[in-house]
Amino acid sequence: MTIDKIKTIIADHSGEDEANITAETTFEELGVDSLTTVEVLMDIEDEFGVTIEAAQVGKTVGDLVRAIEEAQK
Amino acid sequence: MSFRIIGTGSAVPSKIITNDDLSEMMDTNDEWIRTRVGVAERRIAVTESTADLALEAAEKALEMSGVSADSIDLILVATITPDRICPTTAGTVQARLGASCPAFDISSACSGFLFALETAAGFFARGTVKRALVIGAERISRIIDWNDRSTAVIFGDGAGAAVLETGDGCLCSEICTIGGDEVIRIPAFGGTSPFTEIEKEDPVIFMEGQETFKFAVGAFVNHIHSMAEKAGISLDDIDHIVPHQANERIIRMAARRLRMPDEKFVMNIDRCGNTAAASVPIALDELNRSGKIKPGDLVAMTAFGGGLSSAGCLIRWG
Image (cartoon, rainbow over all chains, first blue to last red; front, side, top):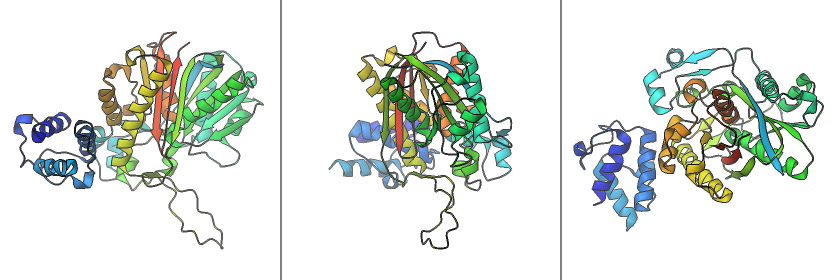
């Protein structure tokens, strides 16, 4: 599942417990700064083979999952 | 034939500017700077010029090498903050050292020192020099926009130097340029011509943080892999990585991607900040003087920055 992998990547870079991350969690709640966003996007590029720009990330984890699924089509 | 490094030196200005000092000048704080960049304090020049810092680093490197300035056949200074465009910083250092060899500056931003090593390697390959002095020196505080809290907190001033001698210590050297001004740019002085219609820009650093970060981590990892492959060694064989101190998080991210232990990565950004072309030779000198490096150790240096430019140099020490 895309979201499980994403949760692992976000937890890894934000320091938040993976169990506390859901599709509704916002990046603001996670305290994700601009460099953490890039760190997450670089790991996503490796994991999924798609390039997501920082502007496409959206507000929530679910938004990011949709952006990746859209890019994979 | 290439070169080996027979001595190193470094110099930083005496004034320490802490994150708390910066907090009094702009809307920032210690925690923000430490977590975003990894800098706790940096040295900022008050009376020291770029050439002063370069000279002090050079003198220390010559002293460690046990060779005299008049035995040097070539002096290269990598800098993007020369005190003057003419004479070059290298020429000023040459005069003040009492040397008489050819001397010139090299400009390739934060990768400059490694571009200079590669340039020197060409002279050694042709056998036209037996000894070279290569310096990275910056008074980057001169081109900082002190109202821009996203860049002002990153940088520091300083210089580092290495004395090279004919030898077979340089196993691999790579330089790379991806020309463009969208991610990092530092305009030059616009002049006072009454005829020009070219718009004048402030001669201060502009940097797009996210793109810089991505480029830096990618270039860092690629140079290490590529140099190891060319030299026929595994990453485990590398004893020390001396990276450009751009941002602690760039180094940590690259370390993870290379799956190499943190202790192999030389880090001084917490004390020095990002000193552009000076950062690799300062870090190399600190490693050299720490006693952690032994003859025969493999040292991989890598740098990345404005240009965009990136470079790597793999050295067998001693």
